[in-house]
Amino acid sequence: MSQTQLIGEYEIYIDAKGRVMIPAALKRQLPAAAHDKLVINRGVEKCLSLYPFNEWQLISHEMNKLNLYVKDNRDFARYFFRGATELQLDASNRILIPKPLLEYAGIEKEIVLFAYSNRIEVWSKKQYHQQMDEEPRDFVKLSEQVMGKVNGNINLS
Image 1 (tube, helix red, strand yellow):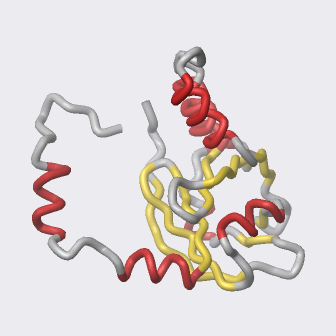
Image 2 (image 1 turned 135 degrees about the vertical axis):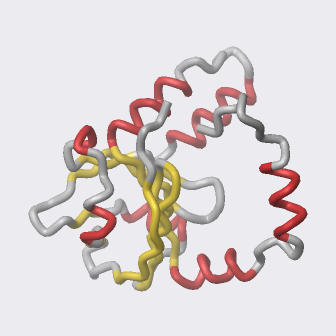
Image 3 (image 1 turned 60 degrees about the vertical axis):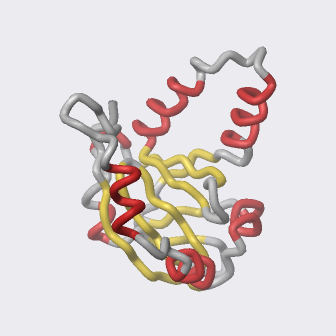
């Protein structure tokens, strides 16, 4: 079960070499168990997902439970792990995002780091704002559908 709870939304720039500086407020939230190591992969939407290393290990452990004789499971695992890369924060708290992942997410210069739960989504600024502008028309109804099923006996993590 995840112990990490990241929060925040940060608009920053990516440099010409593909490096992103992790804002100090976000860096302070990273668990010591991550040892300044992160793993990045393709997100479900047109973004990238960045995980503290210890969280990636938990997710990988869960993924290893999939029955790989089931085609949908194999397809999901391939897509999920495709492009996954271990990253190390440098002395300036920067990470180097691989070019194929930048291309996948349409990231050029301006990005948004959106931190929630145990991950940080990395979006092109334009794509992020398009996604957020398309938020559900009736957030109250969506909240009821999603969270209304939760009671004291259900673990959301």
